[in-house]
Image 1: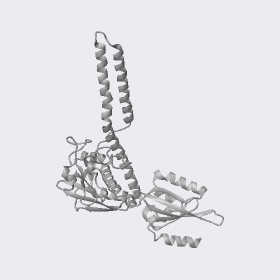
Image 2: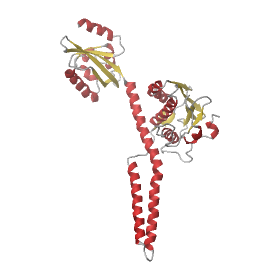
Image 3: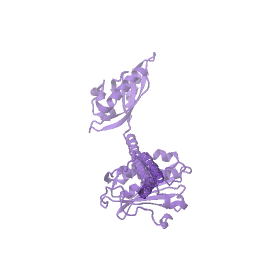
Image 4: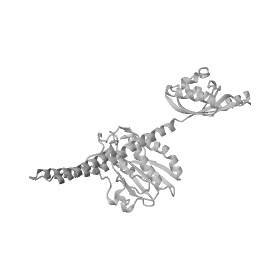
Length: 384
């Protein structure tokens, strides 16, 4: 066993991961050089229970509880927790895994553990949660707008019946029976409106934009990380064509991420049966930054091109028809525009523009005033 431990120590000192050896209860008897270097603790400080000093206070209880459970169950150890970096005091997420070493009677005598940095994965997961939240809120806003006419109809009918009821009662000989019928219909109209309101009671409009100076290159790189597995799933290769020296834009970072995710997912799903290439292009166009997402998929629905940015329009059997409508709403609220063109060969390209940081107006409204139809002229759809 001593020989095995010596070999383990020699091996882990050459590994890029943090590593340790622990007693059955979790007390450390060894921590490799990378663990010492990262935490800034001395080897003496790291032994025994000293390693707890490197764990984020909010994570420590669940980590200790995990060790207590394992002394009873004897299962393999695995947990995620934040560890403090010694040189600057910052915390990063790590995943700890350890295997038990048992004697001939099956009793655990020690643990061999490895700790890997998962900060990038955690950030990607948080980013997906943020985008999903914004997507839900944006969908609610679009849905609420689409339901407005449903509420107006019963209210309008109720007003008509109320006026009829008043006229019937104002006669020299009031027609009480017909007035009663009009009043009952008015009650039904009010109930219809109330039912509709109940359906949207928990829906909220989009909040104010959280504007900041954003590097579009960074946002694109984040989307590449998040959608990497989805692209591989459908044999889609993602390429980027980013011009040098692009200026930053004034934007709500999460909403910009949402637009890119919607357009990139649309492109990937358009190639799900054939595979293909998704190209993300970013360049400066006069005073605006133009970003394009091009695929080699099924292309645009030629007979219904003018409808693709409308809420609830979809060509997918299980699609919600909200992705492009939400994207248009977001880009317009940033003072930009969005449109689509058919590729010369296969597929389609979706474009959107954003004012650069020094050209962006002060924005605090959900949608800009004026004409909200951002679709280009017909010749633009033909790629001209």
